[in-house]
Image 1 (cartoon, rainbow, N blue to C red):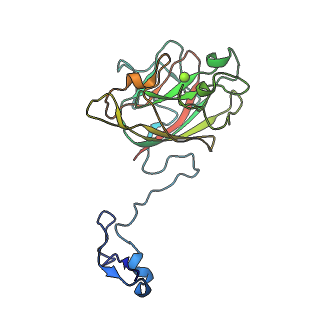
Image 2: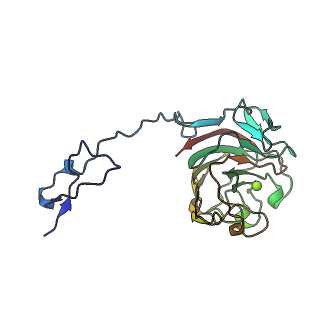
Image 3: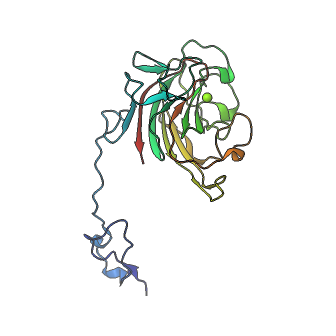
Length: 254
Ligand code: MG
């Protein structure tokens, strides 16, 4: 005879508690026996548009102020500039990083490569969004600009090519929505127990589907060789010598 396991008192049931193991004849079950009501799901106010920050997001750039959330790699004020509501990389000024540190998150960030096209391959509209300071989601002008496939826009640099190239033309705003799960480490501190995992939507299209990173982003060398235990860390925007612009940056900690 088949038995199901009822949830016991529905009102008292919490998602964190295991269900009752009291056997119930499946023919005697009612819909309410599998309904969970508490705790009520937290309410978040969405933005007017999906690209707007919802009520539980931290706004990292609002089109005006850099210094409250960002600094350079030496913790000095950034030399990047704000122009017409955009945060623009200044060649030679170095990376900028958030003062806050993050573990797991959902990030929305919009970017624009220069409308004046110069250079090719990696030298055209190059920047990057580094997750936890170590793992680069490539920003590049990949519109009619071939480069190695795991180095183009939306790649996890030198580890995963994007599933498709959904790049807009240079000079047009583009968006990344990034979901990031931080790694956990084995006791040896140089191998992952669970690797960092990344999902990316580029202009609303899925281009990285929960991929597992092999290690930190490296220009030269094997990612696995560079794994080192770390905790929460900043978001970093790369200075690759091109005046790439950013706007509407917000993050939700998960
Ligand atoms: Mg880059």
